[in-house]
Image (cartoon, rainbow, N blue to C red; front, side, top):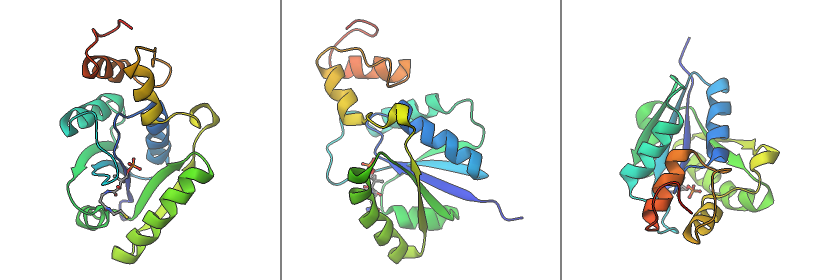
Amino acid sequence: MTERVAVAPGSFDPVTLGHLDVIIRAAQLFDRVVVAVGVNAGKQALLPLETRIALIEDGVKLLPAVEVASVPGLLADFCREIGASVIVKGLRGGHDLGQEEPMALVNKRLTGIETVFLSAAPAWGHVSSSLVKDVARHGGDVGAYVTPAVADALAAAFGRRPGVQ
Ligand code: PNS
């Protein structure tokens, strides 16, 4: 039987527990999940690409069917190159849908790839990378929303010692 490969794209600046929940759920639905770290032209990243990738790799290290890659160009091209049949994205409600639906339609038009949306678990519906960065920027505790490695990376990015708020 043909392997079903899903791509879970995002800018992951940084990866949150909400992202990881969607990735874990995607891994239960597909044979292989490739987490694709792409460039969002509308966002200036805080963390370097290599750091964002390393933090996702740390978060998925217990999931053998999940790998992480960077996408320097078009996501739809990347999906075709690796033989992915579907893009998986989490949705935290109507605001996300408004942003995601046009991208899903463009990706479908470009290469025919379908996007499926997984509703964010209620526990993570309010969590975003932007919110987490804002809390960390001001020295707040982000331990409820990200892995310890991400919390340390944010502390370092904002010039604080890891584990110290
Ligand atoms: O986490 P984000 O910021 O919502 O992720 C957006 C991302 C990176 C998935 C999107 O900007 C993307 O796919 N970028 C790669 C370039 C591309 O394909 N652009 C056209 C998207 S329709």
